[in-house]
Length: 258
Image (cartoon, rainbow, N blue to C red):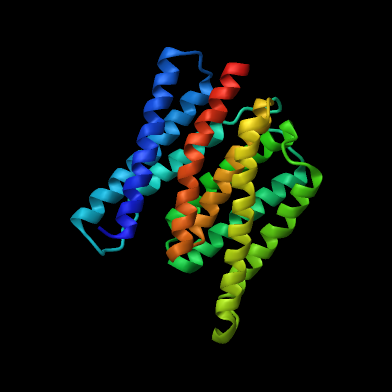
């Protein structure tokens, strides 16, 4: 069994367990509607994994075309976005809206440049952008991130996009350096956000802050996964696996404390 197959099977197992536990919470205990949205998001991700596994068994080594797994990912992004609850449901500063849309658009442009798959990359960018927008509203509403952490992200995101864009234009001798610089940003921020989310999940009594922190770690893990390959992709996928149970726990805590 290849590492990639083992990884996707483990990912599927984590999703399945999270989905079953979420359903049990919904049917047996007090649950808010956002936990229902989350359960549907996990189900969408599960269907995407099942399709991927089936396709790999039927056509091993063949590039997957535009298919049902993409639709599953779009549904997941829309549903995790809806799982986020904020007092000001759609209100955030103009600067935050511009930055969120710009970052999502820049990611989409890079995906298209790497794969040439315009339609699916544009739809993925739109749905991921919606999730990032809802997340930015939730973070802004809860005050989950102090000013210095916002500034760190405002510096890291343009640097990341710049480094990844530069790989298309720099001489081949410099290509590896820019690539590694991009990975350094992705992995460093990702590690910080995961550790931060775990600490806040264990010690913070403000459910809005907990949800915002955990979902931010998930969002960055997804972005890292879409921008990575090889060992870095494996690390990013492991990060998303960690985030799914954490997201459930954070939403459960929010439901119990509301």
